[in-house]
Amino acid sequence: MVGSNYFKKKTFIFFPLEAGLAHIIRSLAVAEELVRRKHRIIFALTKKKQFFIKNKNIEVIDIGEYCSDFQSANQIKDPSYIYPLVLEEIKILKKYKPDLAVIDCRFSAILSCKSLDIPSVFIVNSEGLFCKTYLPDFGLPKLVQYLINLFSHMLVSNFKSQYFDPLLEVAKLVNKNFKRVELLDMIYIIPEPRGYLLQLEDKYDTNYVGSIWGNGFDESKPSWLDKIKPDGRTIYLTFGGTGYDPEKLLSLSKLLIEKGYRVIVSSSNIVNPEEFSHLDNLYVERFLPGFAVCQKVDLVVCHGGLGTMSQALILGKPVVAIPFNPDQYLHGFRFEELGLGKCVSNLRVVDLIRLDWENFQRRARDLPINRIFNTIEEVLKEKDKYKTAITKYSKMFAGVDGNKKATDILERLIR
Image (cartoon, rainbow, N blue to C red; front, side, top):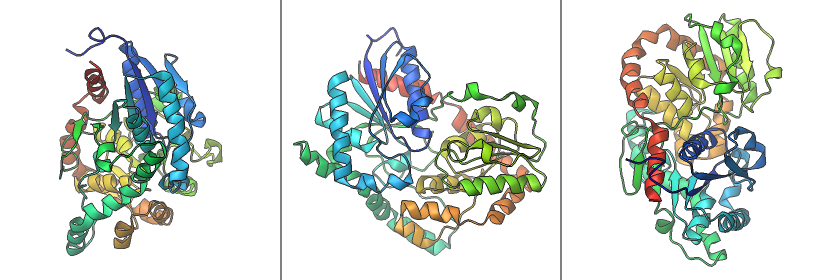
């Protein structure tokens, strides 16, 4: 049995992507489990996101910003931007000499670890793998959907290559000559249940561990939350950390209140809570414990992040997704396809062909607020029709301890 007494103390270093919250939170959840098993943890994170780390047994170190938001997404296509980050990471790795590196979507760290022959594990959802990606029904005409599926591997592969292939050029600057297949040759931890997204190809060492949950916001549970109960008109509204549309968050919450709903908002770093109108039945906090809130509401309206939607699913609540990036579109429409809610978008065929990150964000900002509101009313009125699917898939998502499974894998690798 894998456990804390089986291994000598080892050193793990974590390199999470800074964008949003999910990458940091799930990496931190695994790091904390390793701490409980008496290992040494180094957590490399840009300074402005270090406030998430409250565990004093985790050694937090500063690191240069890789990609904190969509405005910098184009930067990571540029080898001249990546090169100094790789040099910094190599310096860190030489200093701490980790037994294993855990990388969550910070591509530059892949090259840094490979350059020093440091074993690494990559945390990523299945759509992030360099293989054929399952695409859900986007509500397009059948022939158009068929053609999109037919060419999707080429389109998605080209999109991913924009962010990965610059590493091959940077490798030469650090006197290495890697091929893409060599950089991609890693152990992968997939934080979702196997079978949620249909697996079209499996050419990597993938480990589906189920959802990885952090408890970083449990301490931020407000006292007023205990007084709230589902009443058929209570909504949880959150855009996570990547829904870059403060105006939509503000205006949608106000409209819902005006229409007689009770609204709980997690504003994250998108909007300062003080900017919301002071209205009866509007409760706003910067961060909230997702599971605790989902217990108290009838519907979750969110950005299509798999973490938030999974919490809603496990607690038996339908979702309305308003996606802001390609991953969120995929998960939002997958939830609709499975009968777990609705995804609202202005998606066009050309958007799926172009796969431009900033264009997805722009399309979400342009989405009329009345369309979102009408979808919310539709889902609440037809709430019973989602119950069967929610019961079925909630068992899939709730049945595995992803934190433990991921940590067990990491310990086996340094046996």
